[in-house]
Length: 442
Ligand code: DSN
Image (cartoon, rainbow, N blue to C red; front, side, top):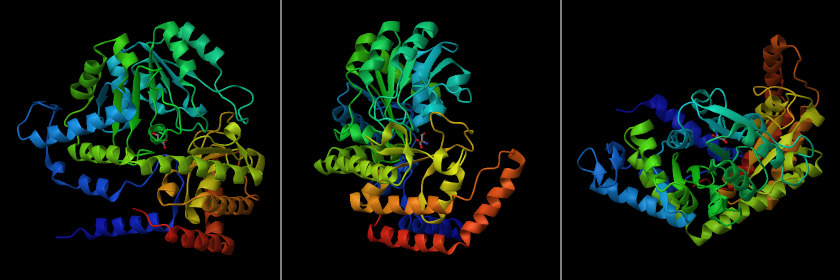
């Protein structure tokens, strides 16, 4: 029996990934070993509980796998406690809230519109529904300069006013390094737990090219599939500072993950996490993470030379956030995302800190270099990619997002039709494909 419908889609997705260049900064290619273990016999097992304390039998091999994954996480990030069971980043963050706050307590995080994550207390997330939240943004002025974009005076003022139990530091769209010490000073002053969500930069931290929050924060969460190049999953770690503040914090995290929030862990994913952490600990990963940052800087520099305005005045990590307003008007992210998709350059539309449009029609695009660097691309290829992005943007200069909402759907459909038959788009598509095929995916 063969389900040809799904099989054909798998083949199509393989072709899409091979022939295009992935620039979404939160995506990457897991190694062949990681992908293989995801379809191993561990996929069949139930193992609620924790190693040596399971509810069902037959878990002797699962226990060993999970203990190895925990041990590797602890060694890699230099922490005394790790839980590797969260299904992904959002449940991991909710588990942290569950472990540290009671429903109705206040937590604080970076606003989504300013580059933060939904699970740091946005109103539509469970973290903003079951908890009161205070959200901080970036500085009002100077966010296009290469200097720390946080307004610590304002964050401190908010913390003193709202007295949160938990403060989040970490973002999904922030192109510079974090100063975790400054956040710790504020959290310590108000007696809050400080949790660093390092999902985007975990691989850079492990590779030594981004500062580690571990000396300053109590809790660290990360997904395992972004710069860590593992399977889709997550980890929650507690630092020595966290255990000093609350010796039961590890137990509270464990209880929040299971039985608080989840059922049986995905043991095949746990095995994939263990393999990914082994790969991250190899010397070649340091070279990889160093190259991610070099590539991001090269791509950012070439885009700025081409006249684009970048949040943070460039990139210090793996990520670039472009404000398109000056070249294409407000709300132009959708045109750029769609047109670049057509030429095989995948990235996402994103809000910018001084957004004048809306989250669905934002004025920015977000891109990054983890996936292309995994394929072996270097600065030369980044310059080429930047030149193709600039060529596509040039083609878009005659389009503007209609101010009237009811006109947008039709306008965008016409734009897509015109782009699809544009010979220049076809030419760029073929150039991108030629480059992509020179750099195989794992
Ligand atoms: N979806 C992830 C990202 O793209 O940054 C965050 O959850």
